[in-house]
Length: 156
Image 1 (cartoon, rainbow, N blue to C red):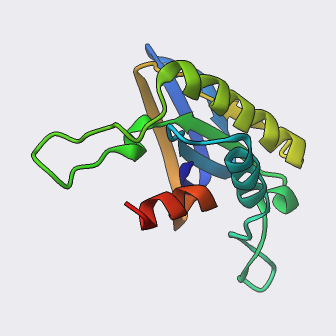
Image 2 (cartoon, rainbow, N blue to C red):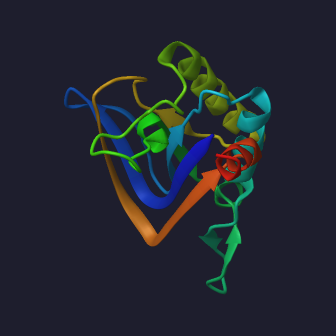
């Protein structure tokens, strides 16, 4: 599993001009499900995202998690995170999970975030034509890969 995480002051996702999900301060995630992802990948990522200390404490140091600041999470499924553009001019998406398998895994990831204690978890429309708007705070942007994804990349 791959996640592009951004600390935000606010974020929203629109489909056909209407907001279908949004948060105030918190984390905006572009979440890619790989074709080999398992429940263990989802659990690892949900725990990592919920507990990652990327919010400032009273001394201005990144010591607080989204849980500790009471922030929300907007997670948008993003198969293009698995785009491989090393050859040619058109990316290959063979590493991405197929839509039938990826949707339930992304849904499960959202459930796991809530189980970790995130009180506001929002999303877009899986497979939809979405417009994501956000204000990156900091800016803080991190690339996360589950352990099995890092291992697969190392052996590719």
